[in-house]
Image (cartoon, rainbow, N blue to C red; front, side, top):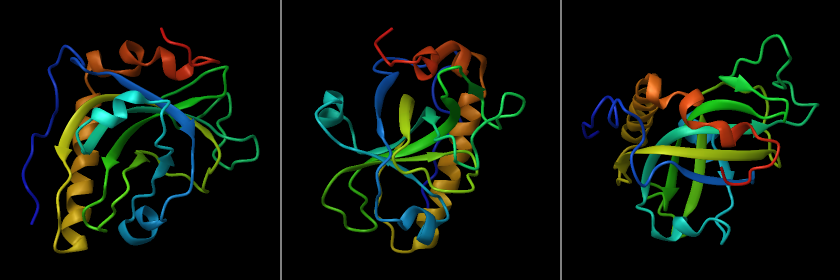
Length: 189
């Protein structure tokens, strides 16, 4: 059974403290369940001491923007005329809306926290090792336990819809929040 939550997150004026939160890293292999079991492939990022706020953040589902620098050989490598993403920069990063889970996945009884990013875009191939930056703009919900995988899938679909609706407002657009995502180097703004 899924639990109702708001269809849009955050005020129309844009992200509020403590957001936006930033993290970056190279995409690593996870358990493969997002794609195989759930139909929502995830790009996992390492949980390490480069992101100190991770130790204090609430376990749950978040949303925002992610930039990805695909290798030149990747079939989804953007071309100058059509990228299929929200923005592409000279740095080689393309930006996509995203939802992500942070923490232990209760349904699979994980005991080690993970960061799993689901880009709201269809990719033709995996991109392990690609550079990714994440700009978290809001919190959707806490992690839950589920008796059935179908209930988890239903909540993930709702999370994706909430993220799309929430990011589809002027103050939440990439132009307002995402300069850091497209820079050649990701130094602080």
